[in-house]
Image 1 (tube, one colour):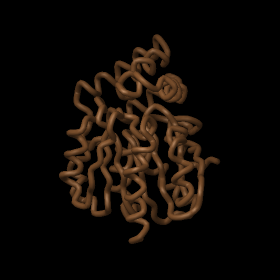
Image 2 (tube, one colour; image 1 turned 180 degrees about the vertical axis):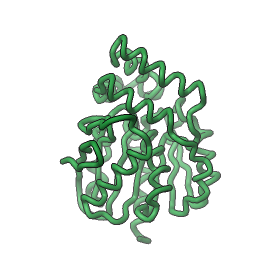
Image 3 (tube, one colour; image 1 turned 60 degrees about the horizontal axis):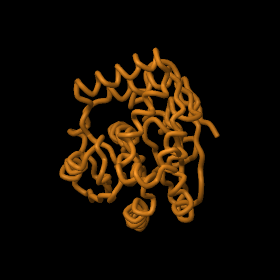
Image 4 (tube, one colour; image 1 turned 120 degrees about the horizontal axis):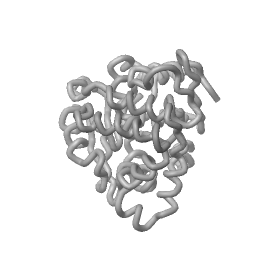
Length: 265
């Protein structure tokens, strides 16, 4: 199914019934990132699984895929589904989008789960690396970039013991150069959200991967320290894609959080 948002059509799927839970996947994959947890969660909740702008089956539109555009896409999706309030779970870029969504549309947020993400903007080096990845992809295509990225996105334990999960994640990385450019520019230009953290006054779960080298534990600890109603959980033997690598452990921390939120909304 698609919803029109400004100049792009955003693809999404739904599963289950109950209180709405919106699952936002990380860069550069798509909604099937959540496949391992959907059967369990959809037994109790209405899951909404969009492909972010420039990812998966969603269109890119013109210009960059900024956090503001992503947040507006999310609002259009909620309106199309007649969802007034939901729990939002965001991984990596999904978390960056949720900071912007909170700034713009916090009345639609029942609770937040921020996984393998950070509140800080990119450093100058980080922005430079993103721009270089675009330039390299225009010469060599996107495959070399994704092949290199998978080494950082998946934790050491998973890469050593679960080649099927590594291959499954890599198979979801299907962006062409223009999509990659739109997404990377949007990530590079995202605002710093540290000042936003103290304004978050809903229950918040912060999740880190023990082996995550892209957003190490210190980033999660900073968010936990600044968000008043937050809890921190660490997924053992998992990297940046913790929900994909260790879905049982991810559910072990997410399910009680969702049940707690559902009991008070």
